[in-house]
Image 1 (cartoon, helix red, strand yellow):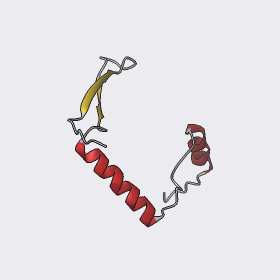
Image 2: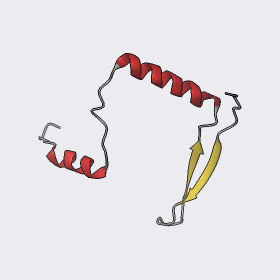
Image 3: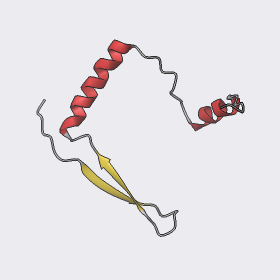
Length: 76
């Protein structure tokens, strides 16, 4: 596997649904040198820590159901 790092690419998306059409910068970081290092460290930490995936959701409907079932009192 050859290593060919390059600067991250910047894309700009125009928010056509908003007033004055502001832009949203989006950076593709997958070609940056730090991407592979971060991916490797993340993989190692995930295997060592064995954290449960209790904060993941399949879709927005699941999130809506969880929020509906959440009990909120006056001290929250």
